[in-house]
Length: 277
Image 1 (cartoon, rainbow, N blue to C red):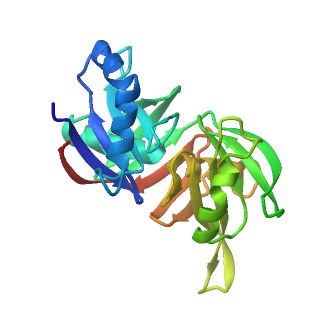
Image 2 (image 1 turned 180 degrees about the vertical axis):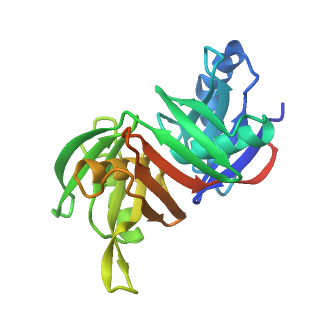
């Protein structure tokens, strides 16, 4: 039987969305468990022989029926706890195809996330992030890195160092799978952007490169953006209500911490195409 799909992207982070919003629990249990589903995810994400994507999103209702819920699967078939770029795409889909209110609450993993939609610009608010301080790792080339550990519902290791995409391609997997991280980790490299007009570093503008757990180098990472924002706040590099811009290879996200210590992210999403597989 043909499966309808929708291809979305947000900041170059692309997803195949499967809409099971009106499917019951028995259908979902049978559909999403076992090797057939895992192989479907892997095959669909293949950029040469499939649709091509960083992951698969499954849109459903939560068990109470009160909230839309998002399940996320990485391109290697593993399930992810959190993906805010994916959530942004799913929020746009709900607005376009299910006529949901412009302001609503989304369930993802154990979190309830507030969403506001203004055309194709989606603002999300997330709380409950945990900053666990710094750790040092030694790479296989013997160089040492200090990074900062943040949990957003999924793990992140943030390194404040300027590197190149080739460097991330070469060493990202080693850091992701380092023995310090029992369940692996997402890795973000972040550094201040240089303001050519003022010949200074801007305190509100950062560049970011990403190595995403279970995926590899990606053009952006929404949960990584929230982790970076929280790290900067907890280490007193930014203050409440100070908006910063995080520049990823796929585009930029505007972030800030509000007075209630929610991390706010604002960025665009769009439908690329839809079809059947």
